[in-house]
View 1 (tube, rainbow, N blue to C red):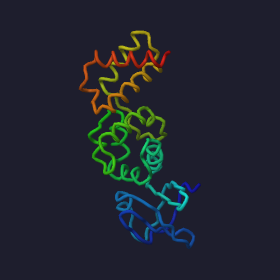
View 2: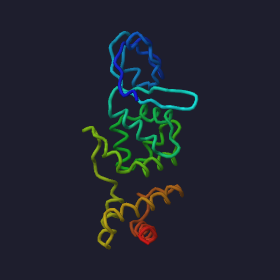
View 3: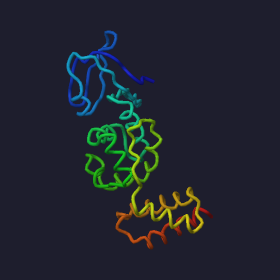
View 4: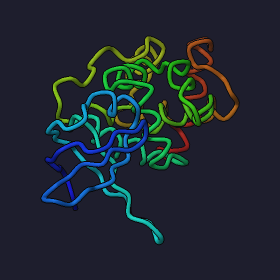
Length: 204
């Protein structure tokens, strides 16, 4: 696995850099933000991720380890491949993406080309809580959405463990997303009913 490369920038395009390492020119896929951050002939260190396909080997490069980690993490979301993941990191800084996931800001994510509203809702659902696992200190650690915090408190007061309440809320969010509903616009009492029904099913 190629994790980092250090070399001289020989060619710059919006979606690709040629970096010479030990006399060999490596073609590295990047987004516009990364290509704008380097200069011709300069020495550069890129944090890389190698994507292997049956018919290709593609090296993706980033200027920070956090950006590379986010690139790999967002690909764990259903329906998101490396090209869309690269587009996400080009449209949103790691900090912006962390904040959007933590606060369930669908509008910010759906503006990314190739995502759309359902894709944004799916990203929030599947990445909620996972971004805190990233080691970088730049990870956004703000409060969860008010509706989720209130719903968690209500479930815990009814005897749910934090883990069970989180599972019930995630299942509820999944159903709402499938129907195109925004949980922040749903009454807490209705959210609680839905979460209780989902939680009952999960707890057996």
